[in-house]
Length: 131
Image (cartoon, rainbow, N blue to C red; front, side, top):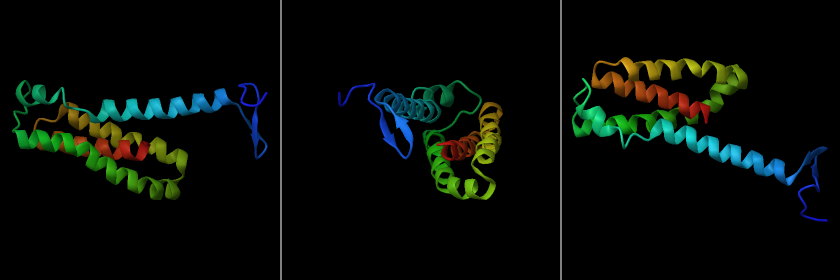
């Protein structure tokens, strides 16, 4: 019966079932959304970071914090192909942990507002390479 879940779609010698395609689609959409949203969305924590921490930032600096990750992500996403072609795909993903670790460490232990911003940009670069 056409369209049945058990009827495989054969392309280039590979068998694709509807459940396989659906599972892959859900994994791709779900993981990308969760990864990007959890790392990039700071709206609810912005007031806490401005007032309750030692950073004591202005509204302008808080706006820079929020925009730092997407800016780094843009640069990372655009340069990911070149990096992967140079060192290889697997090594690129392994080495990508280094800027992610540096960025999150700067965000966690930064004592100045600009250090937190640099950490956001570096972490954004790593997120751009990862996605």
